[in-house]
Length: 322
Image (cartoon, rainbow, N blue to C red):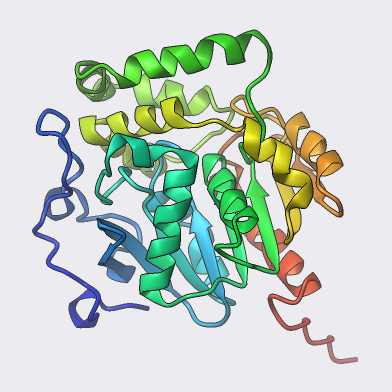
């Protein structure tokens, strides 16, 4: 595990992530006292941004990318299980959590992929395996298709790899653009998030059920106007049509893990992607929602480790003694 005080890449945590004055970001000194795995956190300057990154474990490098509106806390139970086999690298995405917010144009899929590539270059890691949740999967797929990384495998956890279709797709993107352009909306969302019940309903609407601490960590983020603004800008800036068209050329082996009760991205999308990407495998976990990796981290970790062994990112398991 990394000791931030002894890490040469660590910078003073007293600096608050830069963002617009009316949209303050979470403050490390004030908001991280019980942040999961705080002792593994470091702050790194890369690609013109100051990143919050958590590093833990030993072994082949595994890059974890969370989804829109989340942060490293999303891996609070899964990352330690994976750290028994891998060197786990888990950053807050640009504008999310404790990572700085870049210029709006860099909040696109291509911009985020480029910035994560710069972070990996600074850290000096070449991941053997990559795993992402929701929009984090799209960033990883973009990086693979661009040749920025060449992992043996990509794990999609309820991945957002296809454009939203039908009527929802026609109104959601314009709505996201409208909300992202407002300076008032993030402040209103942050204000209402302090009221009991709002964040609980947001989590329930994903089809998942979290413990009180997990809900409180999401509440802490949603109570930050800067974090909310970054999530809205990210949603408004993304286009997945080109990514979907290129998926048949994805080089790494692909494992698609989906929750059958996901109310954010239908589990049927995993089957659609499986049909597009040669050799892809899809697994649907019964009863779990969009945050399946937070609901059943041990089961998800087992699937990831098995997949890694199958495709050479980890050595084969030792046979049990007879």
